[in-house]
Length: 360
Image (tube, rainbow, N blue to C red; front, side, top):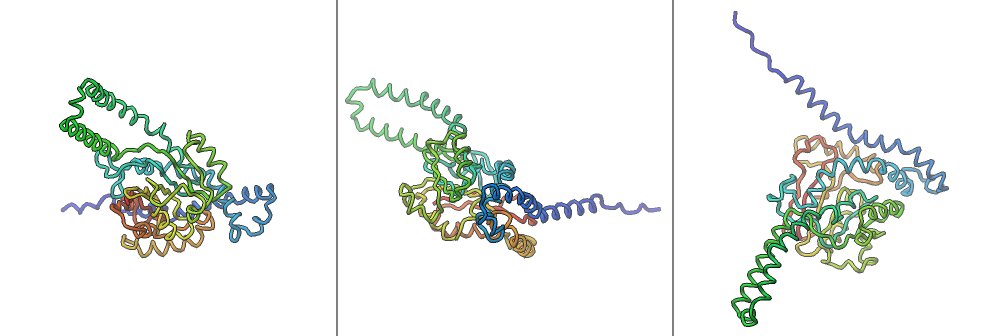
């Protein structure tokens, strides 16, 4: 008797595993919104104790003050949870170690990390403020720089002091010094690729006054009281109220999960572009509208649009359907646009992301 053909193993369990993963991904935004809704009673009691009756009268649908208070209570819990997951992506991003949506090693990086004069968009409670602390992130790099200085700079100085004035004045010595300076500059530039740079000043654009005490607390905790300045107004008012920020004066712009809630995103992204220096870098980690080109794109676009009917109410005005990648690309001419969706995000991701660095 001939043996019966063997049944493929793993097909049915594999199908159900895939189905379960997809269903959980589609349910995820509803679970997140329900967690936000659980903070409604706390918000109402807090507003009553503060006698903020006008905010209560509008409720979550009509009152911006109510929505802001509600989101603040929820985010005090949710923010650290979001950070713990996103930090795995954000830290390499600010080091310049992201290419085509993927984290790479320093040797494979194409861009320098964040440094110089930095503008952070929507810092909120200061969830990412500690990443701008030089003390924490540049200790190893500073030690390396000091070793380089002792190994090369001091020897050059002693050689110069012991040389005769005639030798120093000679054109041959002058050429040699120029070559050394050029070589050192190349080494510095090379070292900057894939590394966090020294930060001289950070400006945080945060118009929500209610969250400023917590933001300032986190700034102090990070040791940035002399470096980090809160700008208590929107992007559109930078020109009027922050004259120290001139066009083409910023080395870097950092936007982490914040462009989803700024007003008039296309216009304001264009405004921010003008403040960036030529060669300046914009570090981006944002959630965006679903991509129509991916498998199941038509379904996910429709589903995301449906979820977005409720999402902004529960999440402080956050919008799921923004075409942020296009807004950034069209803000002005870039010398390099390295922006992509992380490859580990699958077609059923209701809140997909873009990730990378744009260089002006």
